[in-house]
Length: 184
Image (tube, rainbow, N blue to C red; front, side, top):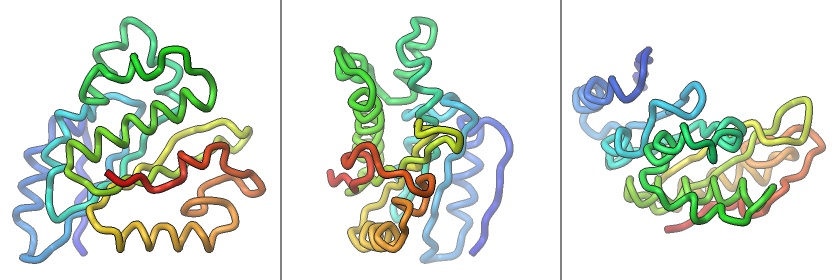
C-alpha cells in the first residue's frame, strides 16, 4: 500500500491527487480520506472526480457540529450549496429541530455523495463529543460493494460502543437512521 499526504486546500490539489492515482500500480484500489478543517474546501463539485473514481472508496470527516451551527446563516449559504452540491437542503430543514434536523443534514449529504460518485452505499458513523452526548462529527464511508458494507456492519456488531467503536462508552445511538448503511 502506498499513501501520500498532500497538505493544503483539497480543492486546489485534485489534479495532483488524480495524477497520483493514475500513476499507481495496475489493479490498485484508491481509498480517499477527506479530512477537512471545518466544512469548507471540499465542495461536492470540487471532489466529484475523487468520488467518481471507480474502483475506489471514500471516507469523509463530515464536521456535523460546525455545519449545524452555521448552516442557516445568510453569509454561509453559498458555502453550503457548494458543500452539498445543490440548494435542496434548506427546503428539507424547514420546520425540523434537534435530532431530526441533524439526521436530515447527514442524510442529504450522504445521498448527494452517493449520487455524485455513483456509490451504491453510504454509511455514516456518529462521533460524539467526549464531554457530552452531542454530535462532534460523522465519518461517512462510501462504497460500491455490498461486501464492504457487510464488513463495516460486522465491525459495528463486535463493538460495544457503536459503529466502528466510535461512540462514547456507555452511550447509545440517538438515531437508528444515522448508523444504518443507506443504499441508493
